[in-house]
Image (cartoon, rainbow, N blue to C red; front, side, top):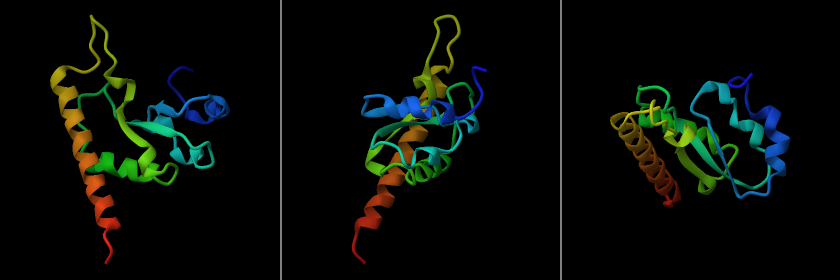
Length: 126
């Protein structure tokens, strides 16, 4: 089925790819758990953290929480925040209108800002 299941069935194929970065959708629960990648190759991940198929704006803290979970499987320097599908659109039927897409990008930006502040705080000797 097209829109069901996690990345487990694709794991071997993903591992075999000669790429530096995977760009994967993880904004919805159906993507599964990132822990399946903990023992994988040393890759970057474009982590989908907002869902362009819904108008609800993800809270920045929820986005930051998802990234914190990803940090169990990927080094923070290898995580890039992305919208699922990159706000894919069709001329006759846009997935997200400009106002929604802008608000979602702002939420991702705020989450990234929070995570950078946390990283700086951890790096300061006590």
